[in-house]
Length: 252
Image 1 (cartoon, rainbow, N blue to C red):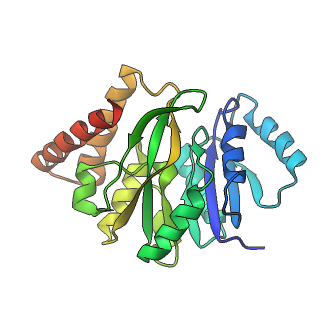
Image 2 (image 1 turned 135 degrees about the vertical axis):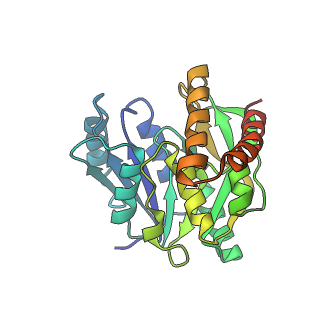
């Protein structure tokens, strides 16, 4: 039986978090969804934990796909999209959490806007999943040129309508910061992303606050400007300044 919404979760070494993340999908007030879990070669027992858990659940809406070898989050998400059957495609990272009304509110929003691409606000959370009170608000719309300066779109908040944005376009580039690269790729085709400024997702910060990670993020975004988008050095520097300021403000 085909479901209306497909939820794609790439899974890699998240034994301590994945069951809570799955349960946040199962607690959704909107129930016509399928969940595609793409196990990407975990080495910490995540796959075995999931298999045992799903055998107990016997929920036909949930599928576990085990890849032969680790290919990274982009490849795992791409495989999930290929296997998905729903009209609407959503992403959820394996350590993040959805509020119970997330799908219901976002689905109503994408229909109201007759949009192909929407995203929502979110809240930073600690390692236990508890919200920290730092909510990221989102703009009403983002187009390509605006999005180059503003990477507010967070993976676990996104929803696509594949009757408007074709599934073939949703293949994430196999680069670092592949999610941002996908948003830019879609927007570059002339689509507009619509923001629902409601806090519907908890972004669990697990080992994501180290200074080394910040430097890696800088290198990744710069690579997107120069080598993926093909922007000139001045244009890259201009957009990067806006990105850096907004990135800092989201975290303070």
